[in-house]
View 1 (cartoon, rainbow, N blue to C red):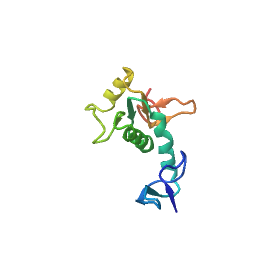
View 2 (tube, rainbow, N blue to C red; view 1 turned 135 degrees about the horizontal axis):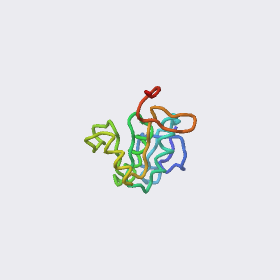
View 3 (spheres, helix red, strand yellow; view 1 turned 120 degrees about the vertical axis):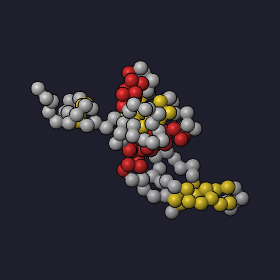
View 4 (cartoon, helix red, strand yellow; view 1 turned 90 degrees about the vertical axis):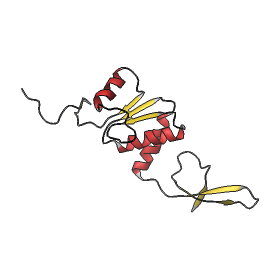
Amino acid sequence: MSAPVDMPPGSAACGVAASHAGASGEHVADVDARPLSTPELMIVAIAPMLRGLRHVAVGASSPIPGSAALLASALDGGALRVSMLGSDVNNPFTDGAKELFDCAAQGRIDAFFLSGGQIDGGGNINLMGIGSYPD
């Protein structure tokens, strides 16, 4: 099953399969339509929300928001800067999370995706450790 590339927003298809001349000679690209997986759907839902931002940071172990940030950057021609902890390619920091959190505290990050080590019922985030605190 193929559909034209100019599919309406929200269409569940991805991947360009072929391109050919249409009946009247115009250039037509077909898309290999298949349902998006849940992670893919989440990625394409998050990416447009990052439009217009300058700098997005992504913590370690956050593949879906990280993929969405990279997609948003690619769609924006690279104007969106993406910093990912633990990435060999997208991590400009030399001192790990310390520099990233300093950057955030200075207001130089527009959006920050965290993977919580612990998040309690009240939404409080603990990024320092797991388990009980010493007395």
